Amino acid sequence: MEPILTVSHLSKRFGSPTHGFVAVDDVSFTLREGEILGLLGPNGAGKTTTITMLLGLILPTAGDISYFGKPFGSHRQASLARINFASSYAQVQSKVTVRQNLLIYAGLYAVRDTSRRIAELLRLLEVEDTADQLFWKLSSGQKTRVILAKALINRPRLILLDEPTSSLDPDIAAKVIDIIKTLQKKEGVAILYTSHNMREVEEVCDRVMIMSHGKIVAEDTPLELTKKIGNARVTVTFDGPSEKVFSYLNAKQYRHRFPRGQVVAVDLPGKAIPKLLFGLANEGVWLTDIDIEKPGLEEVFLSITKGSYER
Amino acid sequence: MNWHRVGAMVLKNQYAFRRDVFRIFDIFWWPAFQLFIWGLFSTYLASASANRVNLVTVLLGGIIIWTFFDRASKDISLALIDELWNKNFINLFSSPLTVSEYLMGVVLISLLKLFISAAFMFLIAGAFYSVHITTFGWYFVPAAVGLTLMGWTMSLIVQACIMRWGHTVEVFIWAIATLVQPFSCVFYPLRALPEWAQTLARALPTTYLFENMRSNMMGQGIILSQLGLSFGLNILYFLVALWFFYRTFAYAKAQGLIIKNY
Image 1 (cartoon, each protein chain N blue to C red):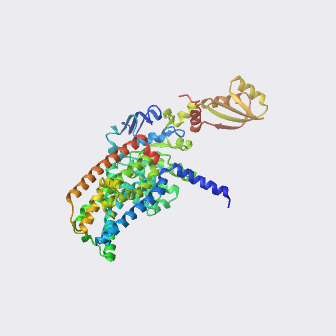
Image 2 (image 1 turned 135 degrees about the vertical axis):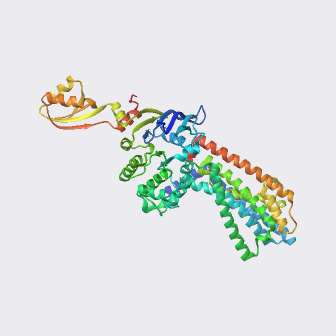
Image 3 (image 1 turned 45 degrees about the horizontal axis):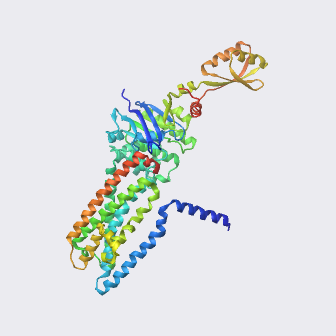
């Protein structure tokens, strides 16, 4: 299947060749129909520059962008007509009602059957009651949903979402995440998603790319990325003397520490957990409680920013 | 009253002032503008009284016709700044909208507002001072078109500057009319200006439009060569401004200023 978006060797340098800086450095990736791709990275990593280049708001210094198999540079309008964008920092006209705002964007995207589409979106995003309210009077959660409605007005095949939940309370953010998942299911939309919230990305994205200093430093499914970072932490509470546990762990060369008398915390790869637990049981250790903490994207992210991550 | 806190406020405003060259505009330009305009008008008043010129008609004519420049120069720039204030610019330009389509839309709405504004002014001028559109005769059409075109030229330049330097230069949306007005001879003839200012005034298409307006109102006819020169200059400046606007937009895209400023 032809990718919806193909990015090849995309670079952006700001300023002069001698005194400028490289914001995006030789970035390549593809995005397929119905896929949600997360773009993560610390502040200044180049995420927003990448997204704005994908929207044609910043011109790349080098590299190519293609939508639906056609070069973006020579098919700007046709490409933009089939994609859309939403961000917490880009708003719509504040002194205009929600419906009027959506009518404006319906015009810009040459949407047919406008009234029905607007009603459909207001219902999907659960903001029907705000239709005739002025945009500035809405709550942050309502504004985000209206901006999402704007991003869906043209039935896009791809939506670029730049930190859509950044200014929202956790409960509203969770609702927005549900809506995004529904959109993928119901409308089969592909999404390029940037966020600082690792849990959110882990929950929503099929694949994740992590950017640092303008480069893509890691790319995989959230699960595979967390596997690559390695160790889980197993905290075992047991009955009886700790010497037996201590000697077993030393013999098997497990990294461990005893935070309390009959509690031991062991750092080990996820797949070695059953072996550890059976091993302790076979040694006659009576396990009374087991707590397993697997690494998440947050740990992957932190290890990348600390430079300890290996591809 | 705590003088430390008062001192901190003085310091804060002083720092802000020193970093914003456009605030200096407020200090020097406005007093000079007032003095210049009304000083020259008073001089003209004295000579015009002696020549029995209908000053009310000439003055109101100037104000009415000037409205076309004033509105045209503000409306297009205000439309852009409105997008910035609303943080709507990125959403607009991430749609298939082109710069030309954006400009055309803004120009059309600006024309509509201009017609409403002019109609309202004529209503008031007619009711209170018996100055009607017929007072200008056919000359009203080229005068209004010329001033509107010059207003758009100025507006394009200001918009380009806003794209390049951001909110810092917003003041020019309102100031541009007062920069051009003293040299456009709206309320007094070209000869009332000092020599150096006359040189500058001759480079403005607006000057010839107001000179002809007065001449027309006093029954002395219109100098067509001057009108031609005015339109020639107007079209030239408009094309240069359009080129400057597109070039700045491309520069803003290359340098990421669209994202930075908006």
